[in-house]
Image 1 (tube, helix red, strand yellow):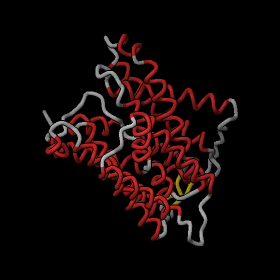
Image 2 (cartoon, helix red, strand yellow):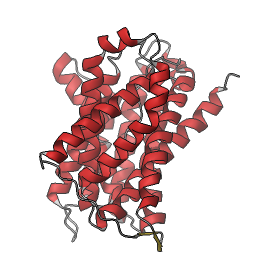
Image 3 (cartoon, helix red, strand yellow):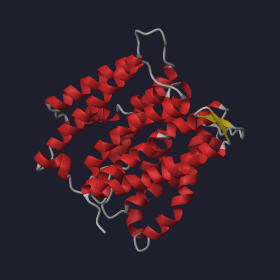
Image 4 (cartoon, helix red, strand yellow):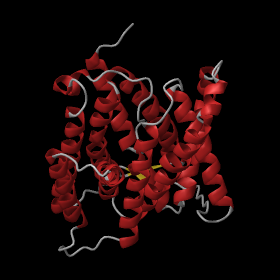
Length: 324
């Protein structure tokens, strides 16, 4: 049975919501003493194990395709998954979930700058307006004139996650169309698990587990609860629904809808952790999202048949998968 575009839109929103809970459920683990490496390693490793069987089933008769895309999958797993999540969780450890995620979502603007430098073609007016708007939003998020100072190391980690997200977009656009998306996701997680393991064993990003109870929404739960949510909801379910959404909507529209992850993450952090950015930071977050939307709309307008691009963006076999 073929799903209608409206169903794809709802699936995309579910994907954004499931990705948005990763920070709020990871932070209680970090607060009881888990290291970012341990939280990311268990999240990615657990998801890789869950996806192992579906990946093997999808690989039947396609092993030559995997060999031809081995470098792409390796870079995708190491940078777009492993390092991106490590930097994001390190930012969450030092700042609120909302601020950390808003910094990461500067990636589309950074991508515009990168493409401008490499192609030497100036972006159009709407892209420039969107980029300037997002930068102004970043200044408000940092709240440089306020009484509270953000952790500068946390800010750097958030921006590093944004850079990794740029790599994610670039690598996703260069994937062989014959490679199943679930193989890209599962293979990337296997590579990411190996990277996290090496970083942990060499003590570059040490593993530190603390098996005590955590506080979620004012109640006490076993440490296993946030771990299970991170693996099954914020990783496995999030990636699977993201793949389904992109197949229904096409990569551009699906990634556009994925911007709502910022709002879902802020909402989840408020409900689960009781944390909410300051008013000026919320205003900055809205400007960042508005700027990114302008950049996305300009991108869609430049596509063939752009008059209907936002609604009728055609599905693509391989799409930029959702992020953290």
